[in-house]
Image (cartoon, rainbow, N blue to C red; front, side, top):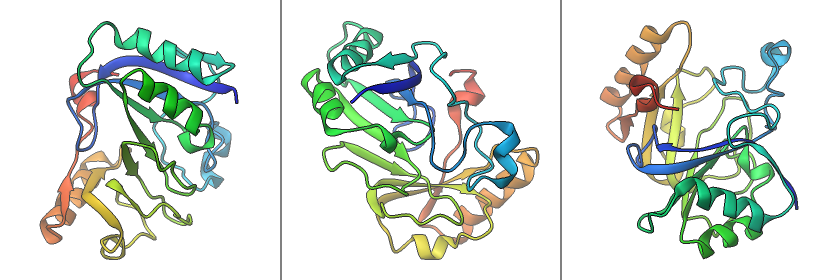
Length: 210
């Protein structure tokens, strides 16, 4: 299988339970909920995405013919350090491309492999960390994992229903939107009203990291 990568870079993970950890971010191109083009945003199943995942022209991006070559690319970005190697695979929707061959190749190089997915496609069972971020109006099939990250507010999602899903951590993240202050207030209220949820901020944006 070949892989289309929008960008790949070394940084600190900015969101969720693993925030602050050194990580290679591997962003695949493409998504099944939005084309990524502004003209399609209004009619997309997910119309609040804040990420560019179109094409392969980002830093560290490109087309890779096989898993070994892409895993080598991730290893070069990580550098010489051997301990606590972490790659966070995201998109777009990473499960459209992420397969066992790539996971195995990354494991062979000592990486823990994390994924951030919308959950509409099943995640590979060999992953080390699964973060699901559900979108209103979609059918989520991946209802187990390590971390459920709810971007809030979203009409059409009931946090109480999500609490029955099999995750270790439940995080609420304010939507990055024009009404950012209102979204922050709504996320804080949710965490206060329902103690199973923890507030999660996009620390990389606060710190000016990628």
